[in-house]
Image 1: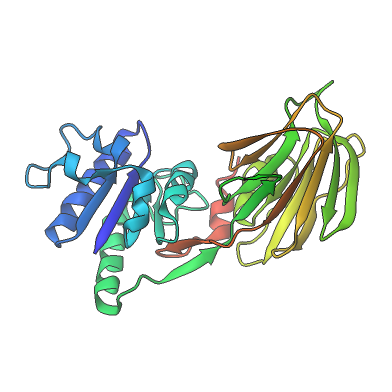
Image 2: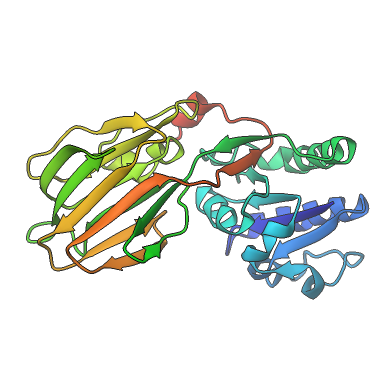
Length: 285
């Protein structure tokens, strides 16, 4: 079995957890892969008996060849790992602050991963639950799938910025007018940018997407639609526009432009114990 480990950048506690987990897994005969940035920051932590760090260091994109990926850090680290893991199951380990994607506390990390390794060896698979992603596309382009949200907006927000937007759901007009932008979020992403813009919380068991307008001149309430709906956003009358996937991947829009947002064909496969959603809500500030 091959296990990939992705640590939060610049976090000493994450590095220590990576090193301790690697030592335990190596002792079980597990083939290791550590993201190359973390591997380069394990001075004084990497056990002498482990394989040379250069031999286990891989780019995050290389994690797709693993049987399990362990993300150690916050939700941002999980999103980073998910972009490279493809269909590989991911287990999220938090560092004391419960994130909505990281159900395993640090003191339980090693035991939780060992349990998954044993399950894999007994059954040949890791038990997972699928978490939907959304994907934005346009004329000749497509962004990587987003676990949290796709944002379509003008190049700048606030007075004098924004864009004229027309939002349709399965072809039917939902809203139109000037706004800073619009968010199309998954239930997972409902607790992130969507929430900060006044969108609702959505329990992860609900099969929906949330459409939330950002600072509209004639604001429409957020809308929950079926997870298989197609949301299209037409952008006009602005200095420019941009589509953003999970706050990272961006596509500059040549206006007027239409962005189509749909459920992606490749969900994230989450391994490990489920998160207590309502307990995690108490961590929202």
